[in-house]
Length: 297
Ligand code: HMG
Ligand code: MG
Image (cartoon, rainbow, N blue to C red; front, side):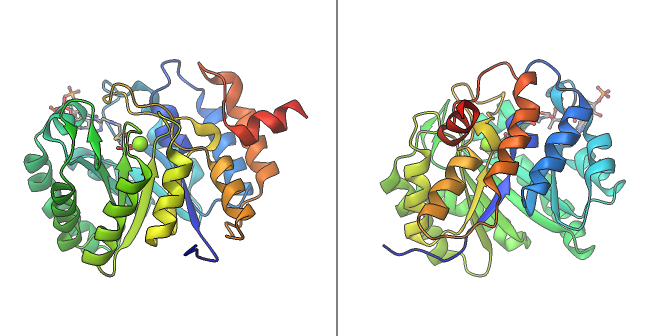
C-alpha cells in the first residue's frame, strides 16, 4: 500500500460535532472539551462558528469560546459571510474557514445564497484576509453527493476548488457532507484534485452516515491525502443537510492510522477523557468503536 509515515488530524468536534445538537451544551463544558482535546495533542481544531444564532443556536456562544480558547495552535473559526468575518476580525483568532456547497440547492439552504453569490461575496473578503496574513481554509460541501440534487459532477467540485485556489486560500477541506461517497469515488476525486491543484493543502472531511468513512479515509490515503477532519466521539452533522450523521470519529481514525504505522501524535486515553466530558450533554449515545470499548473497561 502507498502510505505516509505521518497524518494530521483536524478536530472538528467542537464545531461540526456540536452544531446539530438541539439542547444547548453549556459553554463551560465546551471549554473543558476543547481543553482536553488540546491536552490529547490535537494541533488543529475548528473551535466554533460565527454564524447566525437564529440559524444555529448552538453556536451562539462563539465569541466567548474564541476569546477563552485561543492558544498558539491552529484554532479555526468558521465564517460564511461579511458579518462572520467582521466578527472574526474583532478577535485574536488568525485562522478562518469559509464554507460553500458545490450544490447550489444545498448552499441556498445552508447559507441562504446561491453558490455563485457566495463566491462573489467571499472573493474580496478572502483577498483582505490574505493581505492581513490570516490562514484561510475553504470547506467544500456536497463534494460528492447532495441531499437535494443527488450525485455531483466531479468537474463541478474541481471547478469550485479551483476558484478558491485562485483566490489564494491555504487549504481546501473537501467534504462528503451526507456520508454517501464510496471508496473508489473518494480515490478518484482526491487523485484528480491532487493532480490538478498544486501547492495547496488538501484535507478530507467524511461523515459516517453509511459506515463507509474509515474505508474512505483509507481510499483518500491511497490517493495521497494526509490531512483528515474528524470529530471526537463521531459527533456531528449539518442542520441543513437532511440525513447527514456524525463525522468519522477521531478515536477510530487515530486507532486505525497508528495500527498502520502512521503517526498522528494523539493520545487516545486523553481523547477519551474529552469525550467523557461532553457525552452526558448529548442527545445521543457515542457509538464509535474505540470509545465504546474504552468506556466498558
Ligand atoms: P440570512 O438570514 O440570509 O442573513 O442568513 P442576513 O444577511 O439576511 O442577516 C439576517 C440577520 O442575521 C441579521 O440580524 C444579521 O446581522 C444576522 P438581524 O438584523 O436580523 O438581527 N447575521 C449574522 N449574525 C451572526 N453571524 C453572522 C451573521 N450573518 C448575518 N455571520 C447566514 C445567512 C449565512 C447568516 C445564515 O444562513 C447562517 O448562519 N448559516 C449558517 C449555516 C451553518 O452554520 N451551517 C453549518 C456549517 S457548514 C457545515 O456543517 C458543512 C461542513 O461541515 C462541511 C460538510 O460536512 O459539508 C463545513
Ligand atoms: Mg461536516
